[in-house]
Picture 1: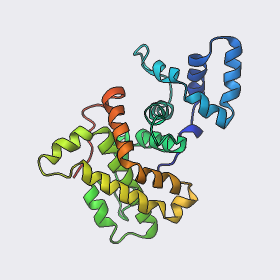
Picture 2: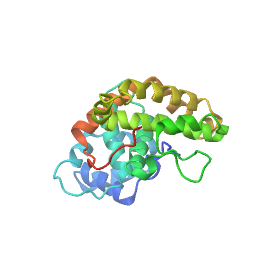
Picture 3: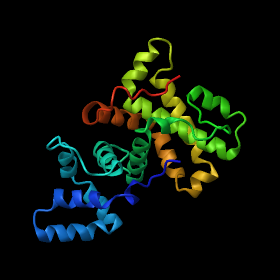
Amino acid sequence: MIKANCRERFTAADFDFVVRTLSRSERDSVNLVDLLTDGAARDTVLDNPRLVESLFADGGPLTISPQLYFYILLRHVLKETALADRDVSDYLASLLETFSQTARMRSPADGHTSPIQYVSDMLIALRTASPAQSFLIRAHVGNYSLFITGIFHETVQHRSQRGAPDLGYYEDLGRSNFHLAAGHQVARTCALSEIFEKLAAGFREIRLALNHLSDSLIHLDNAFAPLIP
């Protein structure tokens, strides 16, 4: 299950990258290390635009974790919108980190021995799913709908010309499933209810921000084909 926990999983290499990027003197470096041990101060430091600039400065390989990479990018595209919520950025960074592995794009809960591959099959599985399974499926449908319309919007548009569901279909599907998942006890226990409600309410705006991210800042391998029914 995806959670808003990227900021809890930063590595020593991540902190070193932040310190090296933002420090101008040895004294600055010490101060930044102190700041990065405090949650609120850390969040302010991570909003520094120099971090985004550094990701693309020399084109060389990065030594930071996927969770820091995606968090910095998500904050960059979302903090100027009405959805400048750090927990939402954190959740979406976890989503991109998770779905960057194609095997993890499938629904984790269908009551069978293998994961569900297609959205249409996930919706059918809801008919017989337990409450816990329903939550996992609905959260996954919301996540998946946001991911493919955000990162692979051109693929969705192209396939819709041949009769497949269009962007509007996935927006409605993702919005409704996030809303339903938000009311589940598991969401409340995992501190996801408010995040899911914000994702439901701002689905289109977030999708457009992810479109910008995909078109301008990240370029996933063309062989990474989303599983669209």
